[in-house]
Structures are given as structure tokens and as C-alpha cells.
Length: 260
Image (cartoon, rainbow, N blue to C red):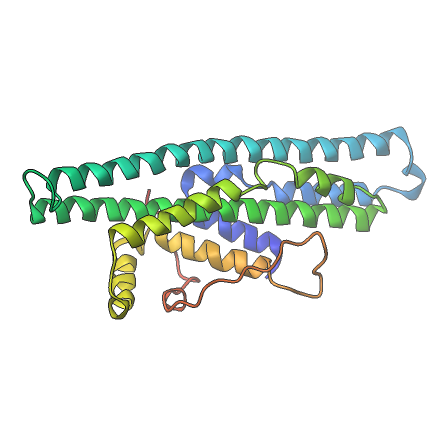
């Protein structure tokens, strides 16, 4: 699948509030085409230089957009992670086995609500990791097109700059994702033979929402990060997903209803 189509699909499948935060790939591609189609005698002229400067300006605007959105989401995720931990502890202290007034019914009901929220929270964080991946890949591809069609040398210097940007550095989000998974394992332990059933129930609960979108995002990350004939040192490293019977069970090419 061409990158432009994959990006369009991802924008359609992400959360509604996120859709205008992705790379303006189509517009940048048009500008590259316009610059590269300039007559040879204009190369090196002030007019040609202005066009290149406009291309760089737009790229910088895109990076600023990515950073602002990514850092806003990171801050929100930190707060929500702490709130989830506090909610779990409150339920344990109020209705858990060691509470002054233990209630198995109340405990299960409240923990069930928290579990759904954790699944959605985990899904949103996966979507943000995919947001970083796909926008970086888009920048690398559009810069490659620019250098190839114009004979310019923008890509190396610009990608080195991108590698230092907040939106590219996903260490904190990856850490929160892992902590979220550990939280689920600790608070909602299941026997090994029940894991398949539990996973399918999770799909039933959230299969039309963020959970399903997160699976689609994981598959996209795996696709854009796999080795290919165009793989280079500008490409992201391959993503090795753990074996799971959950991922193949989705029909990812079907319409995805997004719920937030």
C-alpha cells in the first residue's frame, strides 16, 4: 500500500479529535512536485530559493504541530495513569477483602468499570505511539522525494533534527504502556487457560472502540517498520509484536466505529 493511502486510512481510523494533527502529506507532496517541475534555468534563482524556503517552513510548522499535540497527550496520560491507580486503591480500601465493609458485588462492579477504562487508556497510548511512528515515516518519505526530484540535500540534516523532537521520543509513553499492562496483570489476574476467553471478552466490550483502533495501529506500525527494498538508516527499526490470537481475529479492513 502506498504511504499516502496508509496515512489516509490511519487518519480515518484514529480518534476524531486527532485527525487534524497528522502530517499534511498531500499538500507537501504537491509542493515537492511544483518545485521539481520548475524549469532548469530557474534552479539557483531567488524564486527557486523562496520555494525551497517555503517547503522547509512548512516542514517546521508540521513538527511544531506534532510536538504540541504529543506533549499535551503525554501530560494527560501521566495524570490519567495516576488517577487510575488511585481509583483502584480506593476500591480495594472500600470494598476489598480487607476493608471494614467488604462487598464482593460492589468490588467486582467497580473493578469492572476500571478495567474497561484501563483497556481504553492503553489503546489511546498505543495510538499515540503509532502517531509518532507514522508522522516520522511521512517526514522521511517526503524529504526523500524532495531530494530525489530536486537534487537537494535536505533529508539528512532535517532527519537528524527530527530525531531530537519530543514527538519522536516515545520512551515515557512506552513506559506508561508497560505499567498499564502490569497494572492489568496485577489487579485482574487470570489463569493461563482463561486468557483466550478473557481476551475475546475484551474485544466484545471494546471491539467497536479504542481497543480495536489500537490493534489496527499496531498492525500499521508493524507494516511501516518492516524491512523492504527501500529500507535505510532513516527507517524505523522493525516492530516485533508478541504472538497473539487476538490480532488475527480482527477484520481490519472493515469499517471501524470510533468511540471515545
